[in-house]
Length: 467
Image (cartoon, rainbow, N blue to C red):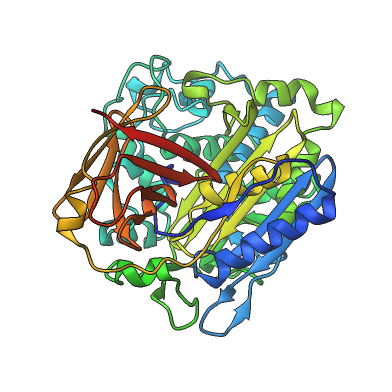
């Protein structure tokens, strides 16, 4: 649902790949990496990685239920959250190809009591988040009591549309990109109106079953889905030093989250699925018979958004991706069509940094540097020692790394990029939770540092003190 993922502390140090290795070795490296994440309490869920038609990793970690000690497996079902959107967009394509609607149709063709302001809003605008219809989540913190009350109420999809009718558009349709969950609820209602079926029934019969996705569906009343994981969130008051040292999933700071009511026409996030079913979806998108629709699906609009997918680049090649978030669940799907690389991670704990996990698994598959997570043991701050580290340092590309003593942490920053707090592991070695890396200053403990080395994603970047 929300695009941003919750950042929590975890780890990094030192394994880099320099040359291609056999597939079985890649799978072993991925297993080692994920086992380290699990052991540190940084991941509970399921992962699937496939490259060039070979599945390299397909496994579960942690627990589907912490209280029952029920292990998560590759068959465990998770709330897909915003991964639902790409399937809704696909269903709209289906109905368009069946000549039951046009992407240029106004939403008012399909919605009763349609506001005059919505007349120029087309289905294409809704798909690409350019409609101007306000996002119902933008005014809610997903971790807040207000959000819980809003989403625990029955028939929340209908309530969301009713509330949206009374609000002005954020901007003229087609003029800007702004991510709107409300838009995809409206698209789900279009599917119902055009097909004459409920959103859940249409998606099951026309999308999931034809794709062989037999463990995928739309939440019905009470979310009684066999094999569905329970969702958890960490206690935000848990000491940071303990978190970075490593947690246990059982007996740790994880509490079960309230269950949001995602029943009805929740095209923004009402789907549950497994990592294996999402791999079937990935493989179906390579079918030559779907080439025209797939080309349309991944054609980037404003902000690089296509039909329920973001399109950009990573590792110097095209990447197609999306994230999902509802209370207790996070998900991230990434495709690299030029490499035929697919990575999906689904978790039932809100502390998992899936963007980092996906990136590292992709690096392993592609023979790029990465870091295996480790425990970080934090010592007390030494303000006198820190004073010898502060100042400005220059990276080889000319960027300046500024280091200063903050109220709570030693801070480093690159203007316009980031500011990160550093936790001391030693007199001159610090852990940076923000980018899951380390910062090491040279010199003896009572000497003024002349260089700092930032290490993350398996790579060292050395910056030298400015004279």
